[in-house]
Image 1 (cartoon, rainbow, N blue to C red):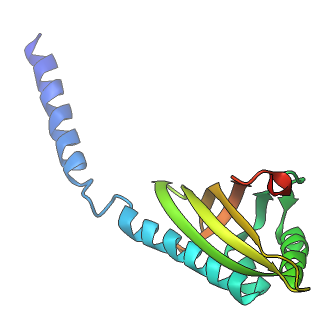
Image 2 (image 1 turned 180 degrees about the vertical axis):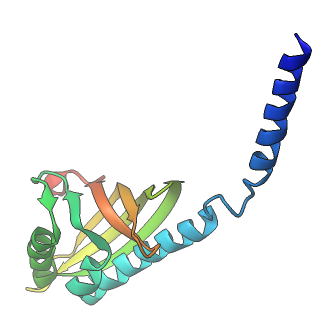
Length: 163
């Protein structure tokens, strides 16, 4: 290696090291804060369904959010989400528990994976319907830094028809 090449290597190294030193933990996302914010979404998800508050539930979603329920077509956008889930809230009272088991954040997207239990109590006096299942949800960071549900897929561990 020539003296000129060694000098170029040294200059390059001395340029990169300060740049790398500038990449402190302050520059990295605050995963704990993001996880806490996403857990708050699940708490609000539960409480809004239990209260029958479709507006609070919809506030958790992006405008073009997509829900992928089992045995149904895609539900795309807030208008369709309101239509489909508002009907469920008209027919049932919800008791729900969501356990978020994993959150992974990558820039302005995150995924959340977990399990849920729910009891749907028919408002017409029918028999309660117990459900337990799992979910995988993609969340999107909004321009104001908050998180919203962007894509959501879930399914029940209970066979259709309660079998």
